[in-house]
Length: 252
Image (cartoon, rainbow, N blue to C red):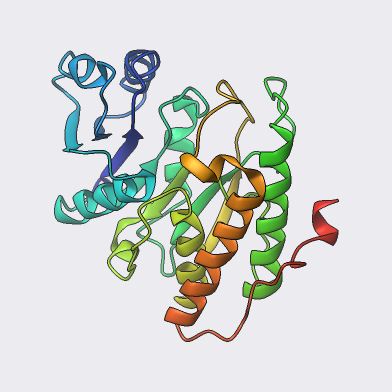
């Protein structure tokens, strides 16, 4: 039986990118879900031009984590086998969707649960430099996850991922914001997921993207991420703690 693959995009005020991304994505995949997370810039009107694309709308804006949770729930309810998530800001290239999805062989005796894109596994000609504060935070949090959870990943924050949909049923995601992927990593480790990374180009088109209010301050954002991680460890009954110097050496 053919593996059913859903590609989902969380979208918030992406009127300048969404049409181009969807036009290209439709050349590579059959089933697409857009979670319009309370857009107010005309994105919702653009989506009406794509009748073949399923749309779930949040009103008001709930956050990145909430949009992904909606995609997880949709994939489970609609009986898909594999879910691929990608951003709609031009960072993730649609031609890689089928390749990353194929790494999750649901017919295997012990299939992979998650394939996570990494912008640091290999060098692509199209790579652009990451904003320095974002690169440093990514490096430190990635090192913390590896040290405390026994992982060996290289990119904690890449939104280009593929999931075995049946595995999503065991998640309990509560963080609605940009820290949601960190809650995901803790749960994936605790559940014993089989995880692989997949190299993707590093493309930054919006270096000034806002994380919302005080989180635009790098120090505040890093502290928030550590707080979310520690809260999730406690909630899962895990004994590790993410301290202020966790990952320091690896980030230099």
